[in-house]
Length: 220
Image 1 (cartoon, helix red, strand yellow):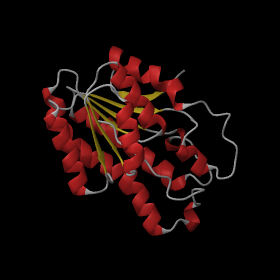
Image 2 (cartoon, rainbow, N blue to C red):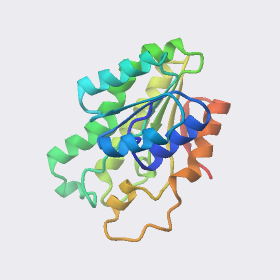
Image 3 (cartoon, rainbow, N blue to C red):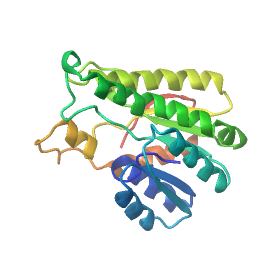
């Protein structure tokens, strides 16, 4: 299961896994873009548009994974900055800050709770949470997003302790040429950032080698 799979890294990971024959449940808020990605994938795929902060939508995703035989891998990729450009903490509108934590922390934990019974039944159950260097480095303007990602990193580490039978990875993919990166730097040329496809081999290798649970930085 991959959230935020209509474009960027989520779509790139979906393509990479589909090429290996994985059955997929993919999510995004934009149904048109999500359906376009689903049509590309030569595998069994269930595409469900919706917001990961919605309880009913998360339940629908979990049920879809169960329908395909149960989840072996949950990729919590859906994310939001809270503004474009992301606001300074002193000016961060509280409703936007709340949404930043809901999307980046609460939703991944809630979806993981729903999918855990399936992952526990799998011989290769794994949770992959997308992190950021903003979770460990202090950048002006990145306080809300960075704090949320830091919380997700810590939640990942705790989950790994509580679920020793699973792999739980938090991965910083680096700066990539994505919509999120463009939103962070509106009006700027981000063509110097590598495409999301360049880090897909790292993630596929992660699944092959299954290193210990922990925080990793993607290499190309």
